[in-house]
Length: 228
Image 1: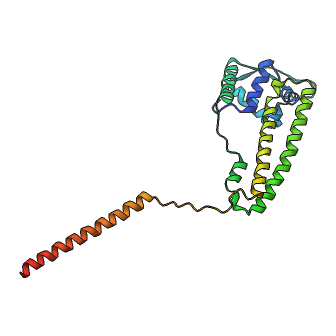
Image 2: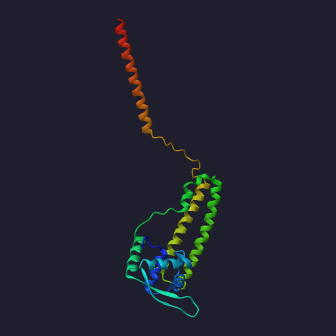
Image 3: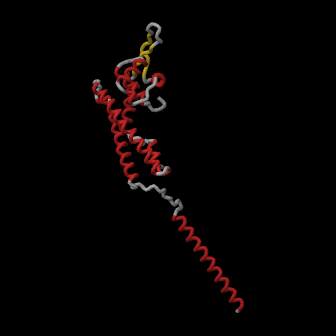
């Protein structure tokens, strides 16, 4: 594929690695196995992904069948190229850190644009939302485990819960520090002038003035000699 394999495409390859399926069955199995928690899944996005994988030669059709008045269903299987591409992409996702730029971080970078009281109000609201999300994600995780899903299929859920808890702890601590006045709120004006340039300019000016004074003194001495 011309562009990197998307997470949804990687999951499709993972499913077809187990056995051939048609797109509708893929969609059902992705939901049953809770892969839709890790990626955004829609009917259109799945079919587009299948078409792109087939066009790239990473999967190929095996057979097309029709049951009654239902639309034709094409069963796909993974190719050797698809297995190699999936392994390479998974290796990259697991082993290489890629910097991310979360929107919350951008907001924190310029938080003093708001009055501290208003920022506190929004952070407290975020804290309440995070608490609810942690509880909901933990409940969903526990339910999937009780259904018999192996832990190896839910590691992305564990990561999400851990990240939410970490952010919640940070936000709660930040709220406490701002309320206690431990966060400077007055913006600091940073001088963008380069000291070395200013110093060189000042030095250059003194040198020029010195040269002018020396030239003037020489001219005065020459004038005195002529009068003598």
